[in-house]
Each structure stands twice: as C-alpha cells, then as structure tokens.
Length: 242
Length: 292
Image (cartoon, rainbow over all chains, first blue to last red):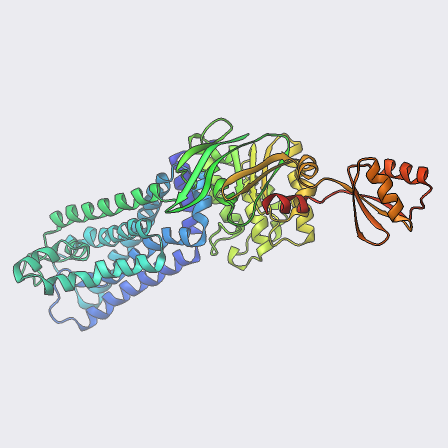
C-alpha cells in the first residue's frame, strides 16, 4: 500500500466522474455546439471550410471554466486538505487532474467535432476542406481546459479565476487590438490564447480577416501558453499552504 | 509517535506557533488543549504537511509526513470539519482517497459502517448535517488503518450518541497501541478521555503532563467542612498546619490536610461535623488557572 502516480490518476478520475456537474456541463455544451453548427448551416450563404466549427468557440469557454472549477472546487470546499494529506507531494494531483481532464474531454470533443461536421453537411451540403480542421477543432477546447486548470491552481478562488480567464480569453485580446498601435496590436493579438485556439480550426489560407497564425505555429504557441500557466499554477500549489 | 521540534509558524507578521516542542507517545490518548488562536490547528496541520513550518519540524514515526510512501497508513487526520466536496457522496469521497493508496474498496464500506453513516453513504455530502460531516471526516481518518490518529475537535456538532462513540473510539485506538492526539475545547470531555495533556497558549508550550499531575500542581485539592463549631475547628486545624478559610459562617475550606486527618482532629476537639467533603479541582479549573 503506497501512493503511486497511476493511483492518483485513478483517484482523480473517480472524483471527476462522480460530479453531476461534469456530466451536465459536457452534455449541455456538446449539444449546444452541435446545435449551433446546424443553425449556422441553415442560414449560411458563403461558408468557409471552418464555418461548421464556429460553435467550438463556445465549448472552449465552457471547458476552460471546467478546468478552473476542477481545482478551485477543491480549495473552496476544503477537500484539498484531504487530497494533499493523501498525496503530500501535491504536484502529482495537478498532473493527474490534467491527464484526467484531457483524457475525458478529448474523446468527447472528437465526437462533438465530428457531429458538427456531419450535421453541417447534412443541412448545407458538402464543403471542401472541412476535414482539415477536425483535429484542431477537437484539440483547441482541450488546450483551453488545461489553461483553465493551471489558472485555477494559480488563483485558487473560483470567481477570481473565472474572471481572470474571461478577461484573458475574451476581453484582453479585443482591448489589445484597439489599444496598441495597428501593426503591433495585430501581432500581439495573434498570440493571445483565444486567437491561437481559433487558429487551430480556422481556414487561414484565404483572405484571413484577423490574420491568424497558421495552425502549426499556433499549436506550438498554445502549448507554450498552457505549459507556462500550468507551471505557474504548480509553483503556487507547492509553495502556498492550502 | 509524533515529535514536534522547535516548531515555528509565522503568517506575515503574526506568529501562530512560537518554538513549540513536544512528543506524543503511542498507546495513550494525548489531549491537545489551548485557547482559541493558541496554535493547535496550525500545529496539527504542520504535522500532516499542510502548513510548511517557518522553522523547526514535525516528525511522524521518525520521518517528515511527506517523506512517507503511504502517508494515510501512518497518519489519519480529522482537521477541519469539512474537507469534503458538497457534490460528491460520502462513499465516493472515501473511495477517491482510498484509491490514491490502493486501499481496497471494501475498507471504505468498513469505515462507513464503523462511523455509523453506511445508510447515508450514497447521499451527496452537501446534504449532511454537521454531525454526519464530522463522522465522515473521522471515517476518512480511519481509512488507512493508521498508526497515528489526529483529531481536531472531533466531538464538534455530534449528538450525545456521537460523543459517546468518539470517546469509546479514541480509547480503543489508544488501547490498540496507536498514537492518538485529540484537541478539544471541552474540558469535561478531555478529563474523561485523555491520559496525557499538551497545553499550549500563544503558540508556546504551557504544560506537558498528565491530567492528575496538572490538577495537583495548578489547583491543589481542598476539603469542605461544615460544623456548628467552625471557629474552634478552624484554629485547631490551623494549629496542625492546614490553610483554612471560611467563606461563610459554619463553613470551612481546608487545604493541606486530608479529610481523615480533619475528622480525627475534629473528634479530638469534640467538634461536631455536619459535612466533610474532599474537593478535587476539575480539569477545567486547572486549565483556567494555567491559561489565565
């Protein structure tokens, strides 16, 4: 009988699946995303290959909040003290949460993305290049979920972390674009998490209005973001008394 | 066995624990006492690695808590009443903790049964009363069948049945040869459960002793004597070296002479006695005296 990393993962898996909110959140946002794809298909006049995935923006926001709550819920309820008493090394808990979250969200997102594409095709008709964005559209929300997890570990309070996430994801990119001189503003906005996530499933080849990065460099930059935020969260988790 | 060595914990400019050292031995119940803010909870949290000491250290069975490979096997702790997510059931909460150590699921059923909450094991913890939450916390502490059990205010919120259960449980754990550290602000509770006492105030050690020693040292025993001829008896007793006071006419409070000696003295003087009652100070009185 001793603590091992697979056991910590199994424990986190147990906790994750036992929450009603996990199921509710994933079911509702998945349904909303696919529904949005159908609604857009019904009204679209000149869709691009990434139009079926517009709903992914919504689920990205929701999964980020799921990542936040996965950790701030423990601090808020005091459960974190029981968790860290069982796993005094602390950091395996964060890594296990990340793996469980990604391991659950990725297959769900694969289905959601596939359904979005299928539904769009059924309503609007075949669209060339749709398949190119499947992987990016499935991965982007998962990356934002992991970003949320890191932010949760860093900030620890649910409301504060969600506020920070919304500011960083939604408000800041828009403000930066307006606040900085034209050229610089556009360059900086490209590297904000939300723009990078969207770049993973957006057709950037033809007349891109926001001048996003191409999918590959965007993926690299997003991984760096997630890595930095998770690392900062890990440092705080290790150093501060729960 | 718990060894606390020169433990110091500061939060900003406030010092919660100020150079505290004591040892908690196995096979007996050690009561951990002190006024609110004395540093009891901080010390207990430091023992299980939740609060990092500013300096000094706490060792459990010879190692720092976090250096143990199976910490729940070493120490079971009930810290604050609620260390439970409201959205999960009692069973899932315990199962998640058990799985970090590879503790079999059957053990979860055992501790739920032992804590008397098996019937509500599938209810969400958010619907639990204070007492049920407390029982779940104690069940979690017992989960790893630990050699050391730490309980912070375990009878908080419990009904009389629950108080009796905790009292019996604590005695049994110590009788098994485990190390048991229990904090409580209920002196009457401590007086019946604790063999040994560690009393702190302002983050420092005030006493590390047994209940009897503490009472004998801080608040000496006295004998209450009622007699129609109290004045004569008073001078006779004083002549034998007793310290005698008379709070009211006909009533004497005698210290420094045991009850039989007082009886003998009264007989020799031909004084009639209406009452001769040895008074032992309560733990509460001794504690008040010590922490005043």
